[in-house]
Figure: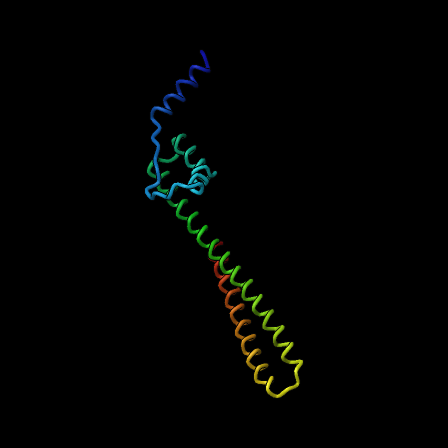
Length: 145
């Protein structure tokens, strides 16, 4: 009995009955799509399909679910990156405000007291915005996990 001919026959049987399924949702063709299609998850689904462990329909549904989850993760990652950039800008503004406040407090004039109060008010507002930004960042991280 020739083992190589048996394996050739079984692989040709698998290839002849193999049906390639695609996800129902069409994504834009880009390197990101190629990354998804070359992912370990897609490879595992293809392997399970070719081994007959799952149907083509189930593979397509799982691939579509994986693609949607991947896209959602990318969106949240972009949102987090934007929030971090916003936080850096706010921190820069706060630091400038602190410097202005420090300079304003050095002047003992009565006219500068109202300006100092205004700067303190702005500093407090910026601190509050940073706190809100950090809260949104933590919430997004929690949602991603």
